[in-house]
Amino acid sequence: MPLLIDNRTSLGVFEPTAFSLFMRSKGDKQNTLDRAMRSIQLLFEMLDTEGIDLLARAKVNELLTLGEIETLVERCRFLRTELLKADAAAQPANVTALRPSLKKGRAVARKPAMVVGDTTVQRLYYITAYLDWFSDYVYLLRLPSNREEFRVVSVKVVNAIKSRIPKSSAYKKRKGLTNPQEQRLLAVIATSSSENPWSNPFVRNRNCIVIRLMLAIGVRKGELLGLKIDDIDFRENTVRVIRHPDDPEDQRLRQPQTKTASRILPIAPDLAEALKKYLVVRNSISKARKTPFVFVSGQGNPLALNSIDALFSSLRKAIPELAGTHAHLLRHTWNDRFSELVEGTISEDEEKQLRNYLMGWSDQSRMAENYTARYVEKRARSLLLKLQDSTFGGAI
Image 1 (cartoon, rainbow, N blue to C red):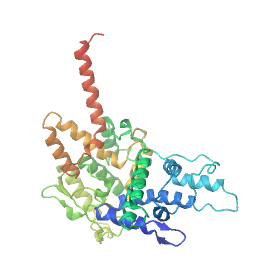
Image 2: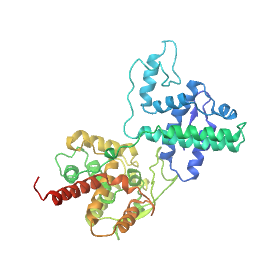
Image 3: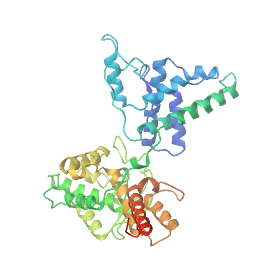
Image 4: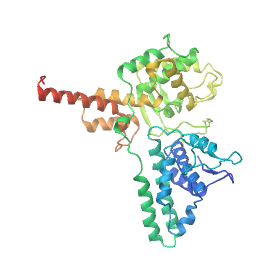
């Protein structure tokens, strides 16, 4: 379980730890807690540099000023490692920057790089969640001298931060591979392909199955690496995706997590046969026979999460056309293909129900909106062209 540690005492910081336990009690997983703690770390570094004690502030019915909110929001736009370098360079040679910040007049030696994607959004989301929780925490402790005044102040602070959270642009949503890109990927990873970037026969075959399986059933990399041999039923040709929280059989430092609901998914006969042949070779590795997990390294150790990242990294370097390919993109690709398959054949409600089951989402989930960007764009363009054709009759 991730903890926020005070470097001066080497002890966990109490309130963030209590918040982390609160998140865990709701069912949030390790990776979510890790993202939350890293976001709250930015908040506490800013507080430390500015000399702010939130508990002391709460006693006098205060939390953050508008200027401090602006500093916090601005800090969340930059890579933390870059901020460390920039602030360290801005310090006198005999001073160590233990708690750098984005204070005005500092971090001017070099311009730090900004974060990409929705990282700023994510950071501010967790920070506002923490401040919201913290406000309830001190309120129930009866710490503020005037609790109702503090309640008004804390709500305004949280809302002020929320109003400054950047809006995610629709066109920036992740899109799956196009059909030609998908076919190119499958051609490259074939074990007989001369373009296959992996020379070791075992690794070449394993990676081929990893990618084919991710495209076939749309699982996350954590779900894939959590698969155990007992989760595969070759009589029915099914794969069981199941949660193994705090699995005592998993000795990996970062245990792969199954974020979604457990489910049983069918696999095509040819993929099942390839998986069966892979397991025969896998089981010839003595160390591999000691672990229940399906996918292992050439030495027989359960495959780590960063090994999947390295797999796609080597693929991107070898094949320029696949430069944007990564593990989670295959989940988006699966959703696009599913949309194309069922279009016009079933009702929207049935499509949603089936997709939510296959992806492991709840019946009421709206996650599909985040995974069908390419299909929606393609469909919208097609309908717009039909509209123009009906309007102008092919003549303008």
